[in-house]
Length: 398
Image (cartoon, rainbow, N blue to C red; front, side, top):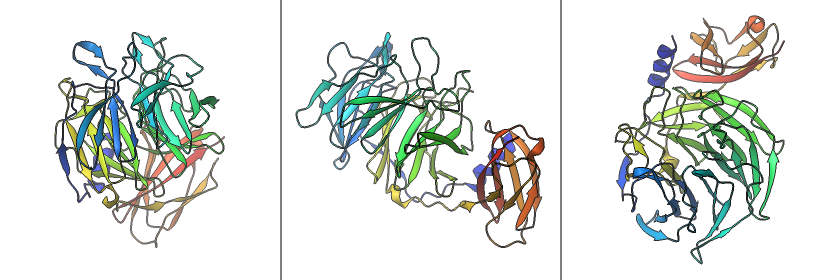
């Protein structure tokens, strides 16, 4: 049943991407995976990572996204080789924190592109970690999850003020630990997708963070397998997601976009190369790039791919949301669907693991359902009407 549902979603969300991928200049140094990157202006900065023979790197390179050319820049100071670091930017400087190379790092390094130099910043006031996700909202970078020397995924969330060089711990991620999840931000909200939890399960919930109230919510579920080692960036009001590794050992070359306003996924034209994971991705809001990583045969690569005019991605498979009231619900609630009644509507209720809980159909504009028999928790309601997907989140409270 689950594979049938996913196949149906894939058909409905078929490629609607008028642009095409182009192979750009290869990463200019040794092939690697699990590197870190950040963007300043129209220049991307990429470095560190694990190279062949399990050698960690400290080297960095800049990519002029207008000219398409790479150039070597200053390396991290000696002794700071690492993989699984987190990279971010305040628009004028770059930052690298965390990672592992035998020991787990909690340090912070600040890159000045004017002087082409790295300088130490305030270290994270907690245990060193690797594989944490991150996103930036305003002058604050948020570091989410990761894995510590205890070899466990964690749920900690830390906020780093890039102006004041100070750290503050925020509320933990309430949906469990995450390691090698993917983070991005837009419209003053943060987003987290994928990653392994504390039980080594591959997750696929899409979570939204509101910094104003320090609160997380699950807003959607990715319509495919859970993953790690994926990439997510925000561009032109949407999230762009590509690559990754699932629990079956499959590496992916697919490309997806998501509009938070419509809670809709759109499958786009894939990277025209074998599946990959652990690469570095970035965007200048005009082009989306993916470079390095490991392919399906576990070979590290140097390839760089880009797709241009990300603002021109057309998405039409999701037309809006379902109204649900009361929500949270107890014994009963009413679902109201967009558009006029008449055509048949197929409805599915899924739990947060993607398991189908209930399915039914109607031709009415609204329908009462009785979720009282369901366990308390959060569910995703998906309706298919006129070949368009509609979604809402249903909270069952007893």
